[in-house]
Length: 68
Image 1 (cartoon, helix red, strand yellow):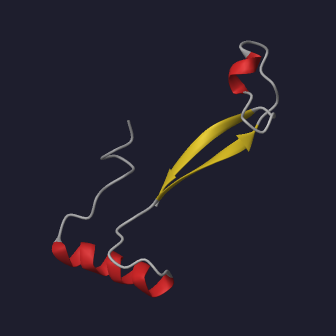
Image 2 (cartoon, rainbow, N blue to C red; image 1 turned 180 degrees about the vertical axis):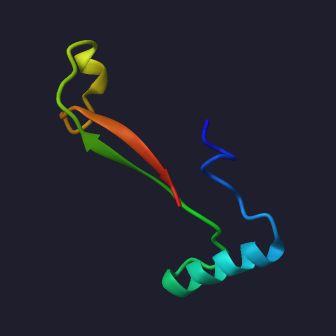
């Protein structure tokens, strides 16, 4: 849905190398170009389909995915 508009992959070898080097300097993971993570953002229980928003910890949330 957002690929191309908000999320883009580095196009040149120089861009990929620069990103990979920055990750290697700040983390212990060489050769990384990006990362994906998810988190649960707490919400008030909705009026409809309330159970569909209850997560494994027992509170209502939206599962949000981030691409870095």
